Image 1 (tube, helix red, strand yellow):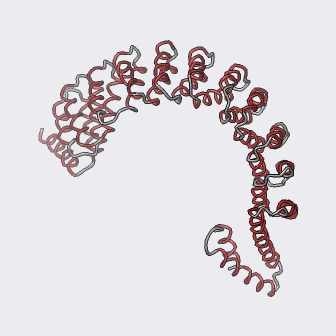
Image 2 (cartoon, rainbow, N blue to C red):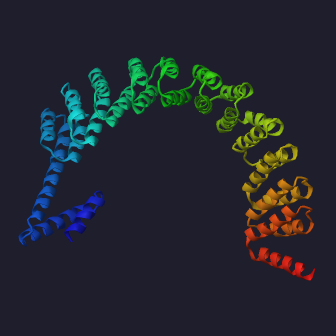
Length: 437
């Protein structure tokens, strides 16, 4: 029973019943101790101590809110005496709320020396909330220390949260010289949070000089989150001229995150100038992700007219991301105008994905006039995926009349995929007709 209450307290610490559970646990623990099991007494005393610390901490909160001058030295003393990391973490939170020259040195000490990593991290973020030159200096010192990676990373993000434009050179230096790419990337992302006109220039420098490809990608994505022609110009240059294909692709996707009509135009210009197939596809997908309605015509023309079948299909999928109520008529137009089987088959699948009776009706009409057996087979399989009884008579006509054995067999399989009583009846009818012949 003791263990059940103990598990409940640990698992449901915020439950309204937790106080009752603690009382019962203490009562049972004392009883077990009197029965010759002293180890339970130690656990009860530990719980009592934790409760006493909670009460003391609540009193300190109250003193802080009353701006009592005794609160700060008392809470520092309380930190030194506590062996409970949860309580120490709460003390750090309270410390961060004080405006005193004694707070930054204490938080710096906790960030460096507390045995619990969670408490150290809380001390770092509390330093970030101090909004003082001393706190910034302390965070810089942590970044440059031999502390574990997570603490140094937290210090970098805390520096970013200070909004201090004077930190741009420091964070740029970390991004360029730090050997741990995790920390170098954190420095790049911290730059994004600073309010400075020098950030784009700093990111451009990182792009040119960083040792790690991942750090360069972080700089690209950070540029994508910024606004303005400078960032767009830098990203466009990387997308077109960088020697590394993965960086060119990352630059393209970063451009898609930049708001405004110039972004769509920049992506179209990259498409016309690039010659790498992966970059061309990435550019098309980025145009679709950016979602500028005016770009749909560009994607449509590419899907219909491009000389590379795979590029044309990528343009169709990119355009599909922008479709709304007019999806089926649009896809039908592509299917009728494109010469590429892959594009036309993809249009069939996208029509089927729209679902409903309208999709079945459109596919049935298209089947009547389609000359390419591979495209007809795609239509047949899409009808099978519809799970609609409306597709059953259409498939029966295909089985009876289509000139391609491959397409007729596909129609039989499609009836099996539909699986409804109507489809089963149609399959039995096919077998009976075969028996009569």
